[in-house]
Length: 143
Image (cartoon, rainbow, N blue to C red):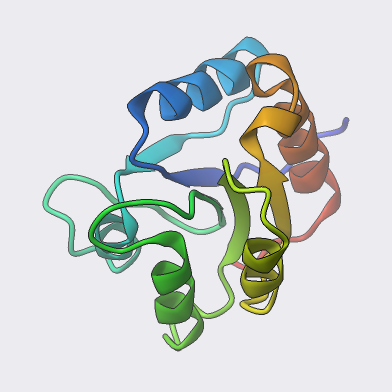
C-alpha cells in the first residue's frame, strides 16, 4: 500500500482482556494506529469532546465500540454522537460479543460502518487488523 492515511483509533470497551487483545493484534500486524482506550461511552464522549483530564483524540479517527458496557452502553453512545453536531459524522465499527440480529439491526440504524462479532474476527483479531488497514488506505476520512 502506498502511504496510507494516519488514523487514530478510539477503542471503547470495558473488557480489559479484549481491549488488550485488539491492541496486541494491531501491533503484531505492524499497524501504526495511535490507540486511545475508553472504558465506556461516557469516557469516550469526554475524550471526543476533549474534556477528559488525561486523554484526547484528534481527527481523523475511527471508533471501535463494544455494546455491553456499564454507565453508558454502546447503543446509548451511538445515540449521543449521532445527535451531536460535532460528532455525528464519526465513523464507528461495532466490535462486540453479541451476535443477536436485533442488536445488529439496532446498531446499523445508527449509521455504523460495520458490525463485527469478536469471536468471528479471527485468531487474535487478525481479520480486524486487516480490515482496518485496508479501510484506512482506501477510504478518505473526514478531518
